Amino acid sequence: MTATTQLPVGITEPQAPVRSRRHNAAFWIVGYTFAVTMAFSALPTPLYVLYQARDGFSTFMITVIFAAYAVGVVASLFLAGHLSDWAGRRRMVVLAVLVNMLSGLVFLLWPATPGLIVARLVSGVSVGMLTATATAYLSELHAAARPGTGRARSEIVAIAANLGGIGLGPLLSGLLAQYLGHALVLPFLVSEALMLTGAVALTLAPETAAMPERRPAYRPQRVSVPAAQRPLFIAAATAGGVVFALFGVFTSVAPSLLAGLLHNDSHAVAGLLAFAVFGASAAAQIVFNRTSRRAQAGLGLAALLAGLAMVTAAAWLPSFWLLVAGGIVAGAGAGAAFRGMVATVISITPAHMRGEGLAGLFLGAYIGLAIPVVGLGVATLWVSMQVAVLGFAVALAVATLAVASRLLR
Image (cartoon, rainbow, N blue to C red):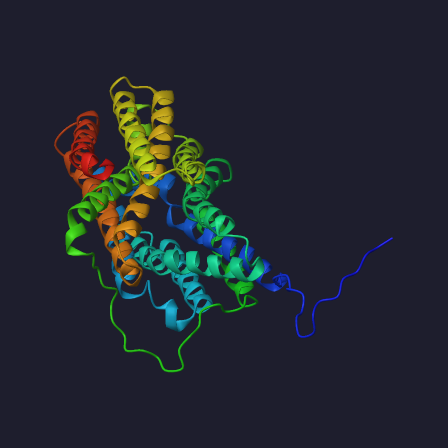
């Protein structure tokens, strides 16, 4: 038996938000493409030691090749990272994937040292175009696919695709190089196929950006923050640089440390180590999603310092398992801390300046990705790897402690 009620004339029942299956399918296509493109950005990590053995260059040259990537990212962030607002999300994501595929072709066709530098620079340009655009695209597709459900799903998938993808790249190349051979060719061919699949699938995805009728005049991305908040902003950007410097070590010289000090030359193990660090970082960002900015920053920086101490001790003892444990602890701390830095910058910048403030944060982060890691490489020309790692850890610890009080205030 049922009871019915009639609404007054002119009043209709509220309609449930309409879900879009097309947008939901596109959401997962973008997530996949984001992940495999970010995976390529760290694909060479376990392979650097092979290039080093083949060409006879030093650990310093590895850091120079790696730093070219950071230069490409920074240039692209400011020149192209914001163009999807008027050029379209789908178009810019596809373009970023194609640019990264071009980097793969350079690795395959010009494997000499200058070619490696150019390939990494081009890959950085792709990532600078991709990260903000793909994150915004995921958020908009999720809102259309599941209206009124909050942003948690899009944030988790964006984090997993970004940091998780970076971790998957070394794992993929390490396993392929270790067990299937053709170490300097096969990983790039497989990655090219994965990215091409994503680029083709993206042609089916709907556009979500509200593109203007008239194309606005081009300008690079600005960096701006209210004058009263600049000390806090500088502290956040410095901490972001420390976080990315840690990431840089595990995607550049960690395989050399494994082979040289720990006598472990397994490409699979080198890839697994990088995967563990970035996986811990992604997991920490998800776990600490609902905690306060202060808790994210405080716990994250404390774990980062503890992990740095463990990694330094692992280099001096030496101890493989201490290196793994230190990498996981430091990676988790870095992930939580960087989420806190993003929340800090968002909290101190007005809505209309938020993109400019976050651009400044990423500028500081990618400076940290390049300069301290190159400094570590320079140090290895004059002192042992153990001493260089100790100096690197001390420098990061001093920088962290110098800004911690302001961040936690």
